[in-house]
Length: 164
Image 1 (tube, one colour):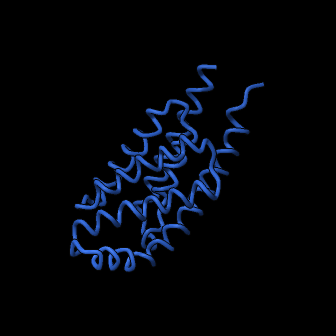
Image 2: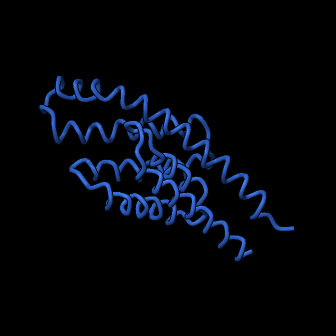
C-alpha cells in the first residue's frame, strides 16, 4: 500500500510540474493551467500539506523564469485558497472550477486595484470592469486544463496505479 501511495504522489507531482512547465509556453492571456494545478492538488493529494506546497513550489519555479511582480503575492494567496477549495470539495467538477476561477479573479484583481488604481469605489469598479475579458479567458483555460488534468490522471490511475 505504501508503494502505491508513493507512486500516486509521484504521478500527482508530475502532473503539477508539467502544468507549471506548460505555463512557460506562449499562450493567450490568462489561458494557463495554474488554477487547474492548485485545484487538482487540493483534490488528489492525500497529504494535504503537499496540496499547498507542491503547486506553490511549482509556481515559484516557473515564476523564476517568467518574473515576479507586485501582484505575485495576491496570485499566491489565490493559489492557496484554490488548493483549499480542492481539499473541501474533494472532487473536480464544474462548480469547483468556476468557484476557483472566480476566487482567483476576485483576489488578484483586488490586489491589482490596491497596487495600480485610485483607492475609490470608482477605481475598484474600473479595475474589475477592465479585467472582465481576462476573466473569460481564465475560465476557458481553467475548464480546459482542469479537464485535461482530471481525465489524464484518471486514465493513468486506472491503468498504472491499480493493484490486482
